[in-house]
Length: 110
Length: 116
Image 1 (tube, each protein chain N blue to C red):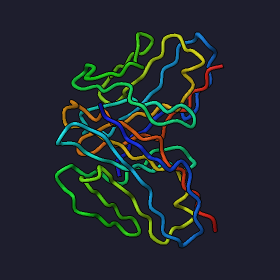
Image 2: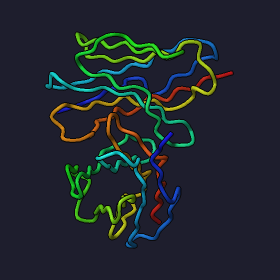
Image 3: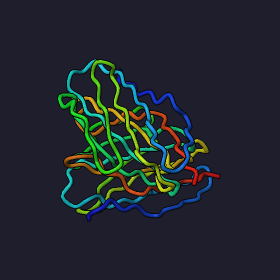
């Protein structure tokens, strides 16, 4: 069964560093997403991406964040200068008839 | 504005008991979708069900069943004969039709612990 894959599963970085989280969505899906879950809190929408551009984004998705689909399979989330409060589980998802999540990347900013 | 409330923060049941997880939502839209996701201790989000607002039929899938009541804006989830593997955090989520994509609004989740 096709699934969304994310790498790495864990990422540790120093405050102020740039990080790139990687995702491979399900191949015939058209929309791609990033969601975030701070430890113990609810899952929050960050951004959706369609036809090589951002479709919608939340207030969380500020100028420090960017997304890219550099080739036909990968979908990345870049945080330009990480802050302590960026520590969270980041979920990639893709949709066609339903929304399917990857297993997440746990980002720890020290 | 969209809102999802899962009033039960944590529930503990003994194995083989039935358990119902409550979900109440708020939306001004007449067309919307409701979801349940399971998040086991390993952290991934597992899709369980999607219902649209025009389909109020209850659904059963094995030990899982869902009761959608538009009149009370509720979409409750029942696990029959619970098992230890059901221990997880369960999230209810709402998508309104005006969204161009799956911009889900999640509830805060209910942590279910099934004790052997």
